[in-house]
Length: 129
Image 1: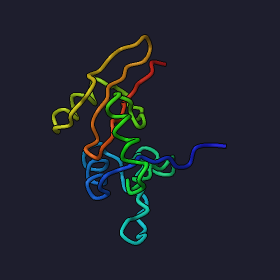
Image 2: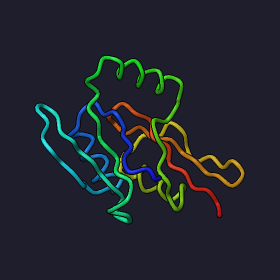
Image 3: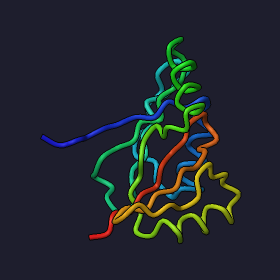
Image 4: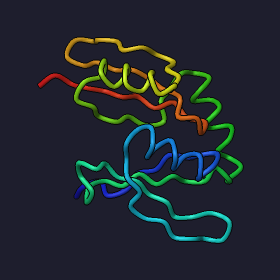
C-alpha cells in the first residue's frame, strides 16, 4: 500500500494553482470540471507519477473553522520535503512568500512554515540522512 493522493483545502482553486505551480514549482497533473469547481491536482516535477496533491475547494461548512483553528494555532495543513530548507526559504522569500516560521533546526530535522495564500500554513522540511 502507498499514498496515491492527499489534499489541501483551498479558498480559490485558480489562486491555489498559480501559487502551487508558479511559486512552489509543482506541475498541474489533472484538471476535470465538476460543476463550479474542478478535480485539480498537482505533482512534483521530480516525480510526475508520484503522490498527487488535490487542491480541494473549501466549500464544506466544516472547512472554514477547521482551517482557521489550524492557522490560529500555527499548525501546518501538510508538509513538503525539500533538499535544503534554508535555500527554499531564501528562494520563496525573494518571491514574496510570507513565512510564519523561519528555518528552525531541530536535531537532524530542519523546518520552516509558510502561508500558501489560500488559507493554509505549509511546512517545508528536510531530514538529514
